[in-house]
Image (cartoon, rainbow, N blue to C red; front, side, top):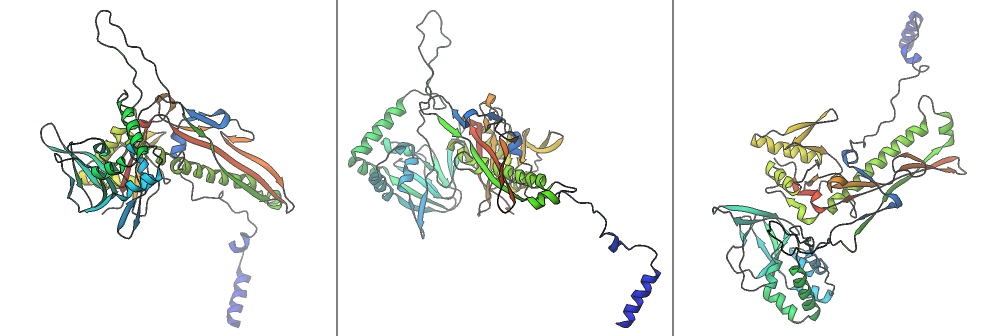
Length: 468
């Protein structure tokens, strides 16, 4: 030990200048601003056109629609036994708005559970149509016949979907398509005879069915809206039809949502530690970034106004085989065919689509967006967003939307001009200093989103990612 100390002492005597270890204690190091891993591109916030909402509420007026809905039902399970939740039967068009819980329970108890293997036929075209089918789990193809006698997939159904409620109102009709299980499937079947037995014992259900039939007879256009009667191609002086455009009597209203937090900074930090970076400004910058991330998350996932939950059920389609293929993306384009603006998908879903393109020898193009090359399909850019969730089963969704109020598309809602605003609809308000010398700032951002007409937003669901 003595020898080592002696060598160190000799080295110090030979040193001609200040060492770096000592010098750095007095030097001002080059520092980065505080970094934050959670910051993303937030493409949705950049791409959505924002509509000014004075008064904090946006009322969406539409033409009157006679569509009775075509929702998805939910199920409960005990072991291998699956049952439809009685109140969920109101998602069926025939039972939409029906409130008698005892009748709904009686109908739910009459559904029979059936299991099918992949490739097995559930219902066969041409055979008697005498039941309604609910798909509790699995994927089912509705297969029809083309003009030239070839089989074609009319629609892909999956968990919560159903078909053929119409057969409960008719007799001696036949299946117009074949339903075949693509994967192992669990379905619940209600026979027409069982429905009629409950109907005969329930005056309230009888009245509801009669009202449903009357509604179905009203004249409507292909979109389900109240028809506007017109005359075209006539000659001479015929009596022209009289008409008017009817509106919804109870339009939906969107109240601006809010994301907020209280930023707290000790006065000692704010006073003394501001060189070379202002601590208050850096704290505020990162807080605003976090609020914007949450804002985009809510615009996508919020159950009241989030896009994933507000797409019309007829605008939701399923992948044909699991992973997102070029065929699936083309099918999604067919749901939003009027001036689609952009796709939005999780980065892993975009990677899965690229893998499927590679398998087929197809190469997606790219499009320039503000000087950046972005992957595109059929000339429509595909933007990444990590806010679109991935389920435990490794499935996600891909959205396609038409943006802008002038296009009757998807719009963001906000109110610019609020007090203490630092960005449109985002403000920072001083709340004072408490008895512990802590300064508080209330940071708030107000927002929502609206789909002006149903065909402005389409979703490709059950997108498998990571398939080998």
